[in-house]
Length: 138
Image 1 (tube, one colour):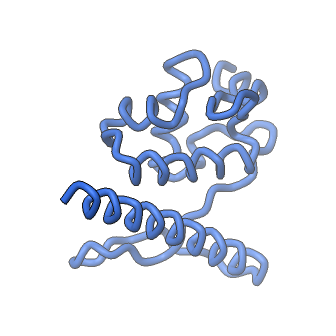
Image 2 (spheres, rainbow, N blue to C red):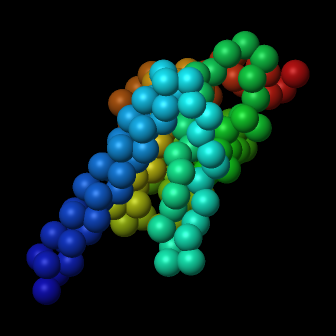
């Protein structure tokens, strides 16, 4: 029973990561084609439609330009005042600490690192980039 449950959580984690990667690729493709992306909507059956991407940080940008889920992550790290692990962030957001939840959040964190919003100076520790912190305080 436990083995089946762990296997199901691992599969769910893979689906979450694959979905986020697909959304990211679709967003990049649309941006390269010059298309405007419509905000994600939720159909009555709970399935999201559309793509929301995380833009590259540029001087003067604040987390307000990010999708809500990413703003929430930035707020947790800002409030902590220091770097946090993805599991700590998941718990602070009230998401729980299941393997699939933490792995999905870790992908969001990596995306924020890749786009210049966060840094990962120590393995597994995500913190605000100095320039983002300066904009937030200014």
